[in-house]
Length: 367
Image 1 (cartoon, rainbow, N blue to C red):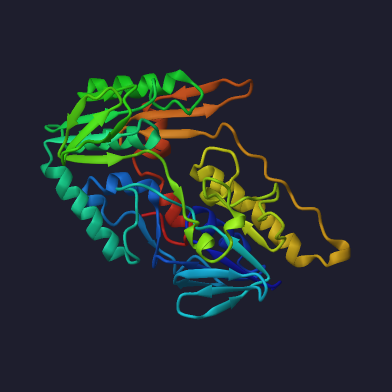
Image 2: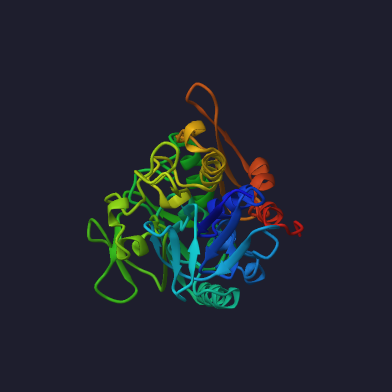
């Protein structure tokens, strides 16, 4: 075993990196949650009762040699090379990894610290969805489109409106065809899609106003309008200089915090300029694991050169429209994208939302 690695955060990037280093180093993974949260399954879990517990996978089979601690990290003490927990416990490190991810809007959020607390929140969303007459979804990116489809299929009798500030759905894909496919599916299922419609809460409860002053009344709303990196704890503990203007951790090409060879940051939390999607987080974790291994195993004179992470500008994107339809965008050489339909999307993601894959990653059977 070469040295102590403390991974702060047990999301997709943190879990992948901890597993990659288990056995090479003494790995400690710290997360505020007692279980892994498979966020990819969360939009359906917020709508369908039979999916309530699907996103929760225990951490107990993740590491064979290392350990997982449920706790809150207060700060990284770089002078003492220790990660300080809220309990006062100090975890010595040779390498620390920031993998605290980002905060997502409801219903794709884990509320509380236990699976029971989060399940109660999902159940509350399900009750609200079951009784709402008009549901408004704000944001026409992948999450907004996916959530609108889930809501429509769960509540065929309710009014569902998707409001998007852009001129086309899925406009970050670099291709118009996925957005057109999504629009066609939603409109054919009686979802009202309002493009060029920047929404803000209105003056009265349950009213929403667009940039032109038009008022939309809805008794339930979900905002799928982006994420916020979980880095406030770094600012509060005196490491605000590690962050850029949007609150992301500044990293070099080897995914190290700038000027800190023994502190890495991976996944949604860092400032790598690429779409923050799960495949990118996993790819970053793999590069960082290699660089951490090299750092721990080589002495100063024989230090190996780190591998540089190349941001992926065009990741595959899979957007389910419920469990049996959707659109898949696959980058192909030459700058174009292949846009695939329901059969591919259903097999790749829509039916199971990658739950069997993530269960296997955490040491469980796929069922």
